[in-house]
Figure 1: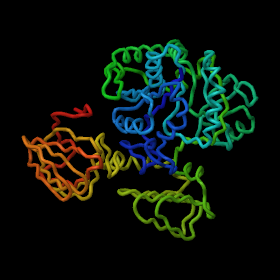
Figure 2 (figure 1 turned 30 degrees about the horizontal axis):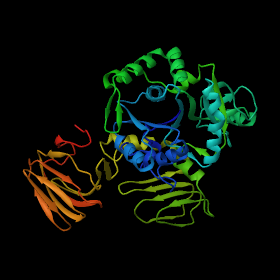
Figure 3 (figure 1 turned 180 degrees about the horizontal axis):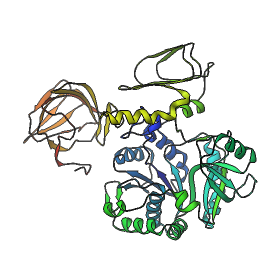
Figure 4 (figure 1 turned 120 degrees about the vertical axis):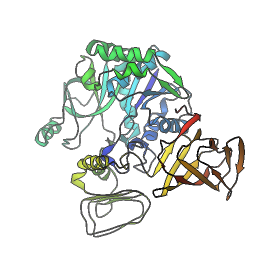
Length: 469
């Protein structure tokens, strides 16, 4: 049985400020066609009736993954494995292989990153069909992207022979300089390393046990100590924390004698930067890519993304402008690889814009800051139908709630109150309370917090539907 494994870990720093640590690029709609994770799931939707789907995620993003699966996956044969900490791709895939073998001794894994774009789904599926007999025969297959330019930002795979067909892997090569990359492209034997794989679960684990027995043993022990929680498979946290970090390339693919490369020419991109987004999207007559409310005059070769306001640009060339509700980025298009330096400055100044958007996602819905001062804060809170916040109290703040849309059921001490639009209530400091949405449309409230400390960590939870402490 085929198990699609989606690796959903990265933080997407290079696409800041749209991508944040708490809401990275795999959960963003960057192409206007759905989130990258949703597109990855849709790309392999044809396997739903004949296989399983496993997503490997971290703790922080678990509810974003679960919400996506609930929206796009109708097959109950799916699972979400939570990594207690990041240990790179080899341990992540090992956990997925162990989970797959738990359900099927003959499981074949199709391993895909969650944050890539593939324009030609038919060509992708054809490549998987071509690779499947090789994987079933015990080969460890990687998909090599047919290069259309001498890129220096990708690793390369050298095929043993120049054939245009599946071939043994001769060598994995690190990111080259421009002249070397040019020679690779001209040779016809080199492919970009896509980070996508197809192999039997038992074969991968067998090779991992040979080449990295330390990783194999820790992952086996951590998986043996797993527990299920809602939609999630939680491996043993203490054991997994001792796992060495390593990529699948270094741990297995560069060492095994059974690596094969299948060429893939399907409009692939890893969407690694704003300049990449500019390259892969349709350009206007001035070679600009614009999204949102944008007006330009004498602008050429630029990428301009507006989230909520009008962005007007005049007389700039080869520029990236990205507007969100709390950050505006302006960068030369050839300098976007250095955006991580700006993110480091944000972190060093003890700001929060590297981690959160103004709109913060929670398993029950979202909240968004509207105004804030020393002793008050105003938020817009949206609660999904049928969802509820934790039963909680605060030591340092009181809260005023006004319902602006929908119906809210409020627990306030020992009483329960049903509030409809334009009605309000007051939660004194220290009072146990809860907000839930018993209706079928989203509940929206305006919350005014007052007190000496307004941080999100001033929450004492007594009960929580989502297993948060």
